[in-house]
Image (cartoon, rainbow, N blue to C red; front, side, top):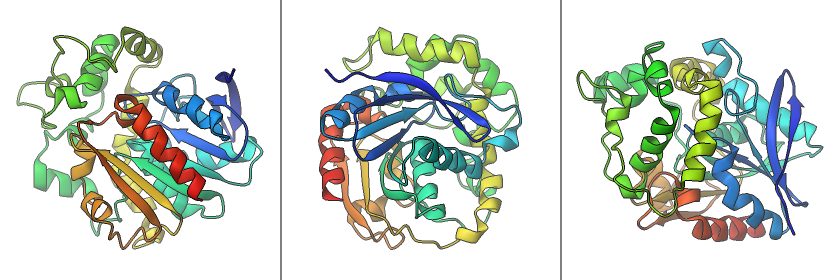
Length: 317
Protein backbone atom coordinates (compact mmCIF):
# COMPACT_ATOMS: atom_id res chain seq x y z
CA UNK A 1 0.00 0.00 0.00
CA UNK A 2 1.26 3.46 -0.91
CA UNK A 3 2.00 5.64 2.11
CA UNK A 4 2.80 9.28 2.71
CA UNK A 5 6.14 9.74 4.44
CA UNK A 6 7.60 12.86 6.03
CA UNK A 7 11.11 14.22 6.35
CA UNK A 8 13.15 17.42 6.33
CA UNK A 9 15.22 18.61 3.38
CA UNK A 10 17.92 21.27 3.62
CA UNK A 11 17.17 23.57 0.66
CA UNK A 12 20.05 26.02 0.82
CA UNK A 13 19.76 27.91 4.10
CA UNK A 14 16.16 26.80 4.57
CA UNK A 15 15.13 23.59 6.32
CA UNK A 16 11.95 22.44 4.59
CA UNK A 17 9.40 19.90 5.70
CA UNK A 18 8.15 17.65 2.89
CA UNK A 19 5.52 14.95 2.58
CA UNK A 20 6.10 12.51 -0.25
CA UNK A 21 4.73 9.39 -1.86
CA UNK A 22 5.54 7.21 -4.85
CA UNK A 23 8.37 7.04 -7.35
CA UNK A 24 8.81 8.17 -10.91
CA UNK A 25 8.86 11.63 -12.53
CA UNK A 26 8.95 14.36 -9.90
CA UNK A 27 5.83 16.45 -9.20
CA UNK A 28 6.19 19.19 -6.56
CA UNK A 29 2.99 20.46 -4.92
CA UNK A 30 2.95 24.04 -3.60
CA UNK A 31 0.20 25.21 -1.23
CA UNK A 32 -1.27 28.66 -0.65
CA UNK A 33 -2.63 30.79 2.22
CA UNK A 34 -3.57 29.80 4.92
CA UNK A 35 -2.65 26.19 4.27
CA UNK A 36 0.21 23.67 4.51
CA UNK A 37 1.31 20.49 2.74
CA UNK A 38 -1.90 18.94 4.10
CA UNK A 39 -3.98 20.65 1.42
CA UNK A 40 -2.50 18.13 -1.07
CA UNK A 41 -3.33 14.99 0.92
CA UNK A 42 -5.78 13.80 -1.75
CA UNK A 43 -3.31 14.34 -4.59
CA UNK A 44 -0.22 12.75 -3.02
CA UNK A 45 -1.57 9.21 -3.10
CA UNK A 46 -3.43 9.57 -6.40
CA UNK A 47 -0.29 10.80 -8.17
CA UNK A 48 1.89 8.17 -6.52
CA UNK A 49 -0.46 5.39 -7.57
CA UNK A 50 -0.34 6.72 -11.13
CA UNK A 51 3.44 6.37 -11.33
CA UNK A 52 4.73 9.73 -10.11
CA UNK A 53 6.92 10.88 -7.26
CA UNK A 54 4.68 13.42 -5.51
CA UNK A 55 6.23 15.82 -3.00
CA UNK A 56 4.14 18.35 -1.07
CA UNK A 57 6.07 20.95 0.89
CA UNK A 58 5.44 23.34 3.74
CA UNK A 59 6.53 26.53 2.01
CA UNK A 60 8.74 29.19 3.58
CA UNK A 61 7.22 30.36 6.87
CA UNK A 62 4.57 27.65 7.05
CA UNK A 63 4.13 24.47 9.06
CA UNK A 64 7.37 22.79 10.05
CA UNK A 65 9.54 24.63 7.51
CA UNK A 66 11.84 27.40 8.78
CA UNK A 67 10.39 30.88 9.35
CA UNK A 68 12.92 33.67 8.65
CA UNK A 69 12.26 36.86 10.61
CA UNK A 70 12.46 39.65 8.04
CA UNK A 71 9.57 40.67 5.77
CA UNK A 72 12.08 41.04 2.96
CA UNK A 73 12.94 37.34 3.24
CA UNK A 74 9.62 36.33 1.67
CA UNK A 75 10.09 37.67 -1.85
CA UNK A 76 9.31 35.72 -4.99
CA UNK A 77 13.07 35.26 -5.49
CA UNK A 78 13.29 33.54 -2.11
CA UNK A 79 10.27 31.32 -2.67
CA UNK A 80 11.29 30.33 -6.20
CA UNK A 81 14.82 29.73 -4.95
CA UNK A 82 13.46 27.40 -2.26
CA UNK A 83 11.74 25.28 -4.88
CA UNK A 84 14.76 25.08 -7.16
CA UNK A 85 17.05 24.09 -4.28
CA UNK A 86 14.45 21.55 -3.17
CA UNK A 87 14.49 19.96 -6.63
CA UNK A 88 18.30 19.82 -6.38
CA UNK A 89 18.19 18.16 -2.97
CA UNK A 90 15.58 15.65 -4.13
CA UNK A 91 18.14 14.53 -6.68
CA UNK A 92 16.22 15.46 -9.79
CA UNK A 93 17.12 17.60 -12.77
CA UNK A 94 13.62 18.96 -13.16
CA UNK A 95 10.04 18.78 -11.97
CA UNK A 96 6.48 19.54 -12.85
CA UNK A 97 5.18 22.20 -10.45
CA UNK A 98 1.59 22.17 -9.26
CA UNK A 99 0.59 25.25 -7.30
CA UNK A 100 -2.53 26.59 -5.62
CA UNK A 101 -3.13 30.21 -4.58
CA UNK A 102 0.31 31.66 -3.67
CA UNK A 103 1.80 28.33 -4.69
CA UNK A 104 0.52 28.99 -8.20
CA UNK A 105 2.39 32.28 -8.30
CA UNK A 106 5.58 30.52 -7.23
CA UNK A 107 5.09 27.87 -9.92
CA UNK A 108 4.54 30.44 -12.69
CA UNK A 109 7.58 32.48 -11.67
CA UNK A 110 9.77 29.41 -11.31
CA UNK A 111 8.85 28.47 -14.88
CA UNK A 112 9.89 31.94 -16.05
CA UNK A 113 13.09 32.13 -14.04
CA UNK A 114 14.34 28.55 -14.34
CA UNK A 115 12.94 26.97 -17.51
CA UNK A 116 15.81 24.48 -17.35
CA UNK A 117 14.41 23.01 -14.11
CA UNK A 118 10.64 23.37 -14.53
CA UNK A 119 9.17 20.95 -17.06
CA UNK A 120 5.56 22.09 -16.83
CA UNK A 121 3.14 24.03 -14.62
CA UNK A 122 -0.36 23.27 -13.35
CA UNK A 123 -1.90 26.20 -11.48
CA UNK A 124 -5.08 25.96 -9.43
CA UNK A 125 -6.97 29.21 -8.88
CA UNK A 126 -4.02 31.49 -9.70
CA UNK A 127 -3.84 32.59 -13.34
CA UNK A 128 -0.62 33.76 -14.89
CA UNK A 129 -0.49 37.53 -14.44
CA UNK A 130 1.90 39.52 -16.59
CA UNK A 131 3.99 42.05 -14.71
CA UNK A 132 2.12 45.38 -14.63
CA UNK A 133 3.67 48.69 -15.65
CA UNK A 134 3.34 50.13 -12.14
CA UNK A 135 3.75 48.82 -8.55
CA UNK A 136 0.66 46.76 -7.68
CA UNK A 137 -0.20 48.15 -4.24
CA UNK A 138 -0.85 51.62 -5.57
CA UNK A 139 -2.99 50.17 -8.33
CA UNK A 140 -4.99 48.10 -5.84
CA UNK A 141 -5.53 51.06 -3.54
CA UNK A 142 -6.75 53.17 -6.45
CA UNK A 143 -9.08 50.51 -7.85
CA UNK A 144 -10.49 48.69 -4.79
CA UNK A 145 -9.39 50.77 -1.78
CA UNK A 146 -7.36 50.33 1.39
CA UNK A 147 -9.80 47.79 2.84
CA UNK A 148 -9.30 45.23 0.09
CA UNK A 149 -7.99 42.21 2.00
CA UNK A 150 -4.53 41.99 0.40
CA UNK A 151 -4.02 45.74 1.00
CA UNK A 152 -5.50 45.60 4.51
CA UNK A 153 -2.90 43.02 5.64
CA UNK A 154 0.00 45.34 4.76
CA UNK A 155 -0.27 47.04 8.16
CA UNK A 156 2.19 45.28 10.51
CA UNK A 157 0.75 43.28 13.42
CA UNK A 158 -2.95 44.11 12.88
CA UNK A 159 -4.12 41.09 10.89
CA UNK A 160 -1.38 38.97 12.50
CA UNK A 161 -2.83 39.46 15.98
CA UNK A 162 -6.42 39.07 14.86
CA UNK A 163 -5.82 35.75 13.09
CA UNK A 164 -3.67 34.39 15.94
CA UNK A 165 -6.26 34.96 18.68
CA UNK A 166 -8.06 31.75 17.75
CA UNK A 167 -6.25 29.86 14.98
CA UNK A 168 -8.95 27.22 14.84
CA UNK A 169 -11.64 29.82 14.19
CA UNK A 170 -9.39 31.51 11.62
CA UNK A 171 -8.83 28.29 9.68
CA UNK A 172 -12.49 27.28 9.89
CA UNK A 173 -13.81 30.63 8.69
CA UNK A 174 -11.20 31.11 5.95
CA UNK A 175 -11.68 27.65 4.50
CA UNK A 176 -15.45 27.77 4.66
CA UNK A 177 -15.74 31.41 3.60
CA UNK A 178 -13.72 31.12 0.39
CA UNK A 179 -15.28 27.80 -0.61
CA UNK A 180 -18.30 27.19 -2.81
CA UNK A 181 -20.31 26.70 0.39
CA UNK A 182 -19.44 30.22 1.63
CA UNK A 183 -19.92 31.85 -1.77
CA UNK A 184 -20.13 34.72 -2.47
CA UNK A 185 -17.59 36.32 -0.15
CA UNK A 186 -16.68 39.99 -0.21
CA UNK A 187 -12.89 40.54 -0.13
CA UNK A 188 -13.30 44.06 1.29
CA UNK A 189 -12.87 44.39 5.06
CA UNK A 190 -15.78 46.45 6.47
CA UNK A 191 -14.98 49.80 8.09
CA UNK A 192 -14.23 49.23 11.76
CA UNK A 193 -14.07 45.48 11.23
CA UNK A 194 -11.33 42.92 10.79
CA UNK A 195 -10.10 40.40 8.28
CA UNK A 196 -12.28 37.60 9.67
CA UNK A 197 -15.38 39.65 8.94
CA UNK A 198 -15.03 38.85 5.24
CA UNK A 199 -15.46 35.13 5.97
CA UNK A 200 -18.75 34.02 7.57
CA UNK A 201 -18.91 31.60 10.48
CA UNK A 202 -20.37 28.35 9.10
CA UNK A 203 -23.59 27.03 10.61
CA UNK A 204 -22.27 23.56 9.78
CA UNK A 205 -19.23 22.21 7.97
CA UNK A 206 -19.57 20.99 4.38
CA UNK A 207 -18.65 17.40 3.65
CA UNK A 208 -15.21 18.19 2.25
CA UNK A 209 -14.12 20.16 5.36
CA UNK A 210 -13.64 18.00 8.44
CA UNK A 211 -12.79 18.72 12.06
CA UNK A 212 -9.56 16.77 11.52
CA UNK A 213 -8.62 19.09 8.66
CA UNK A 214 -9.27 22.19 10.76
CA UNK A 215 -7.37 20.78 13.73
CA UNK A 216 -4.37 19.79 11.59
CA UNK A 217 -3.99 23.25 10.05
CA UNK A 218 -4.80 25.13 13.25
CA UNK A 219 -2.20 23.16 15.22
CA UNK A 220 0.49 24.35 12.82
CA UNK A 221 -0.64 27.98 13.05
CA UNK A 222 -0.87 27.83 16.85
CA UNK A 223 2.84 27.09 16.78
CA UNK A 224 3.91 29.45 13.98
CA UNK A 225 1.46 32.33 14.14
CA UNK A 226 0.41 34.05 10.92
CA UNK A 227 3.07 36.74 10.46
CA UNK A 228 5.32 34.71 8.17
CA UNK A 229 2.37 33.74 5.99
CA UNK A 230 1.20 37.36 5.78
CA UNK A 231 4.72 38.47 4.87
CA UNK A 232 4.18 36.91 1.45
CA UNK A 233 1.52 39.59 0.82
CA UNK A 234 3.81 42.30 2.17
CA UNK A 235 6.21 41.85 -0.74
CA UNK A 236 3.87 42.81 -3.58
CA UNK A 237 5.79 45.96 -4.52
CA UNK A 238 9.18 44.45 -3.73
CA UNK A 239 8.35 41.49 -5.99
CA UNK A 240 7.33 43.90 -8.73
CA UNK A 241 10.72 45.65 -8.49
CA UNK A 242 12.68 42.39 -8.42
CA UNK A 243 10.92 40.88 -11.44
CA UNK A 244 11.76 43.75 -13.80
CA UNK A 245 14.02 41.49 -15.92
CA UNK A 246 11.00 39.29 -16.70
CA UNK A 247 8.69 42.10 -17.82
CA UNK A 248 6.60 40.82 -20.75
CA UNK A 249 8.21 37.39 -20.41
CA UNK A 250 6.36 34.36 -21.77
CA UNK A 251 5.85 31.00 -20.03
CA UNK A 252 6.96 28.52 -22.68
CA UNK A 253 6.33 25.24 -20.85
CA UNK A 254 3.17 23.11 -21.14
CA UNK A 255 0.59 24.41 -18.67
CA UNK A 256 -2.76 23.54 -17.12
CA UNK A 257 -5.12 25.97 -15.37
CA UNK A 258 -7.98 24.93 -13.09
CA UNK A 259 -10.41 27.24 -11.35
CA UNK A 260 -13.90 26.99 -9.90
CA UNK A 261 -16.95 28.92 -11.01
CA UNK A 262 -17.22 30.12 -7.40
CA UNK A 263 -13.53 30.94 -7.05
CA UNK A 264 -12.26 34.50 -6.83
CA UNK A 265 -9.19 33.36 -8.78
CA UNK A 266 -11.31 33.00 -11.89
CA UNK A 267 -11.91 36.75 -11.87
CA UNK A 268 -8.27 37.83 -11.48
CA UNK A 269 -6.37 39.47 -14.36
CA UNK A 270 -5.22 36.82 -16.80
CA UNK A 271 -7.91 34.29 -15.95
CA UNK A 272 -10.28 35.24 -18.77
CA UNK A 273 -7.53 34.81 -21.36
CA UNK A 274 -6.65 31.37 -19.99
CA UNK A 275 -10.27 30.24 -19.84
CA UNK A 276 -10.85 31.48 -23.40
CA UNK A 277 -7.78 29.53 -24.54
CA UNK A 278 -6.01 32.57 -25.95
CA UNK A 279 -3.31 33.46 -23.43
CA UNK A 280 -0.54 35.27 -25.31
CA UNK A 281 1.78 34.99 -22.31
CA UNK A 282 1.11 31.25 -21.87
CA UNK A 283 1.31 29.75 -25.36
CA UNK A 284 1.84 26.25 -23.97
CA UNK A 285 -1.60 26.08 -22.35
CA UNK A 286 -2.99 22.57 -22.83
CA UNK A 287 -6.31 23.11 -21.09
CA UNK A 288 -8.20 25.52 -18.85
CA UNK A 289 -10.85 23.86 -16.69
CA UNK A 290 -13.65 25.60 -14.82
CA UNK A 291 -15.15 23.27 -12.23
CA UNK A 292 -18.86 23.88 -11.58
CA UNK A 293 -19.91 24.35 -7.97
CA UNK A 294 -16.31 24.75 -6.82
CA UNK A 295 -14.79 27.52 -4.72
CA UNK A 296 -11.21 28.47 -3.92
CA UNK A 297 -10.00 25.27 -2.23
CA UNK A 298 -10.10 23.40 -5.51
CA UNK A 299 -8.00 20.32 -4.79
CA UNK A 300 -9.89 19.71 -1.55
CA UNK A 301 -13.43 20.58 -2.60
CA UNK A 302 -13.32 18.43 -5.75
CA UNK A 303 -10.30 16.11 -5.37
CA UNK A 304 -11.43 13.43 -7.82
CA UNK A 305 -11.92 15.89 -10.65
CA UNK A 306 -8.62 17.61 -9.90
CA UNK A 307 -6.74 14.31 -9.68
CA UNK A 308 -8.13 13.17 -13.03
CA UNK A 309 -7.17 16.47 -14.69
CA UNK A 310 -3.65 16.46 -13.21
CA UNK A 311 -2.96 12.87 -14.18
CA UNK A 312 -4.23 13.41 -17.73
CA UNK A 313 -2.01 16.51 -18.00
CA UNK A 314 1.04 14.70 -16.66
CA UNK A 315 0.55 11.81 -19.07
CA UNK A 316 0.33 14.24 -21.97
CA UNK A 317 3.81 15.62 -21.34
